[in-house]
Image 1: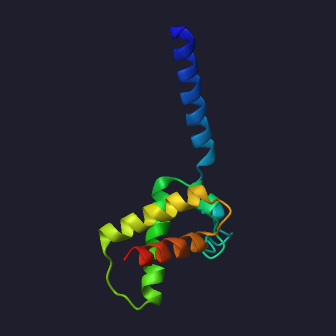
Image 2 (image 1 turned 45 degrees about the vertical axis):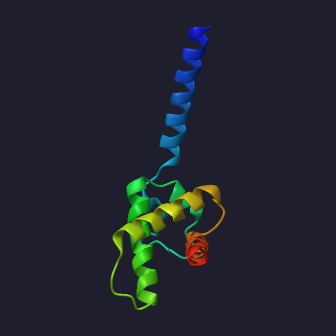
Length: 114
């Protein structure tokens, strides 16, 4: 009985590792032939399916974009990191949304919480 449980646990771990490895792609996968990514069309599935460092990188870019639109010239690092994390979590739960929709959801949720 123990060996069956152990084998099942090992198989589940291997399947999980393979699935996660196959699902992750570099952010450049979504770039056009000139290297540009249309950030307004990027989906949550694409963000959630990229490597963590690429998702974090893009999150910082979006943060700067939104702060620039709001004419803010400073970054609150802990708040930005938490916001990026929340967007990624929301994207994993809502893969058909666009990233900008997830950001909008997180920003509105944050305002409600204040």
